[in-house]
Length: 318
Length: 89
Ligand code: SF4
Ligand SMILES: [Zn+2]
Ligand SMILES: [Zn+2]
Image (cartoon, rainbow over all chains, first blue to last red; front, side, top):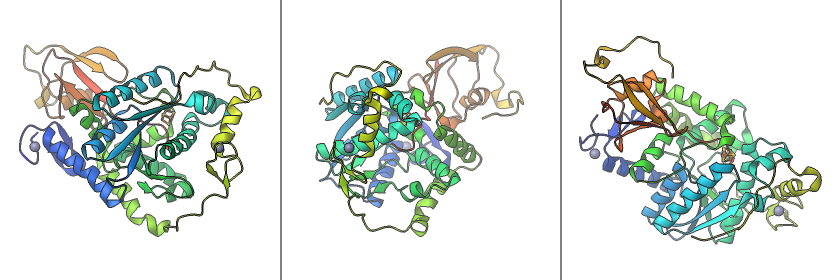
C-alpha cells in the first residue's frame, strides 16, 4: 500500500477516508484533525491553561504530546483509581511520559479523595464501577482545574468513544446525556469548560500515533471494563463500519450537525443555588453528590468488604 | 469478525519451504503463541477472526497494513486498540 500523498510505503490505511499514509504524512493528517477540532469548537486558546486528564492510556498521552507540540499550555492530572496492577502501571507510564517530556503532572488518589477505590465506591453505592468512577472523575477533574488555575479540562475521548456513546444514548433516548454530547461544553454553573480534541480521530489512529511517536502507554484494559456496555456498542459500530466504511463518522458528525435542532443551545445556566457545605463546590443541594458519596464510602456501617489500600500522597509534581 | 472457512485463496497459498508456524504476541493479554504461518497480514487476521480496524499489527518494530507480507520467523505483535468502559469520564 502506498501513501496517498507522497507514494512512499504506507504504515496505516484509513478505509473511512479511502486513504493510506506513510509516517510523516500520517502525522500531518492527524495534527490537522486535532487542530480542526480545536478550531471548529473554539475549545481553547494559547493563552489559556488546560488541565489534561491523563490516564496513562494511548489517547490521553498522545493528546498531551500533540497539545504540547502545538504549543498549548497543559497541566497533566492523573487520578489513581486504586485498581490493582492496572493503576500501578497507569501511574508509572504517566509519570515516565511527563518526566521524559518535562511536563507538569499532578497526581491524586481516589482512595484518599473519595475514601475508597473504584471497587469500594461501586460496592457501597450500588453503582456500576464505571459510574462510580465517572462521578468521582467529574468532581475531581473540575476541582483540580480550579486549584491549578485552568480554564478548561481536556480529555482524550476519541471518535470511537463518542460514536459508541451516542449509540448507547440514542438506543435509550437519554435526552439529558444527548443534550450534553458535545465535544466542547462551555463552563456552566460552576463547572469549568470541558473539551474533547480527539473527537475526529479513531482508536486505531491514536494507537498508531502513539506507536509511531514511541509513546509507552498502558496497552491492557481496565479490568472494570470487562462487562461495560460501551465495549458492546463499540463492537456494533465496528461491524457497521466494516460493512460500510465512514458510517461511524457520518453517524457522529451527523448528530453534531443536527444537535441544535433537537436540543437548542441554552443560555449559560445560573450557578447552582448552593455551595457544598463540605467542599464548597457549586451544588444543587447542601452537600454535593461527590461528598455524599464519600460520606457513604467512609461511614462505619457502609465500610466496603475489601481491604482498603493505604494512600501515601495526595498530590505531587513531576 | 467471523468469516466462512473457504480455505486459503490463490494469493495466500504458501510457497514450498515456508515455515509451518509464526510466533504471535497478543500485547493486551501478554500471551505468546505459535500460529500457522500466513504470508499476508490480512490472511493472518482473517484466520484469527480479528477485524483489522481493531488492532495494530507490528513486526520488526514496523506497523504493517493488511496487504503487507509477514517475515517468516519474526514475532508478530497484535496490539488491540479498543479501550474504555465509562461514558461519564
Ligand atoms: S473502565 Fe470504567 S472503571 Fe475503568 S477507568 Fe474506565 S470508567 Fe473507570
Ligand atoms: Zn507520505
Ligand atoms: Zn462537596
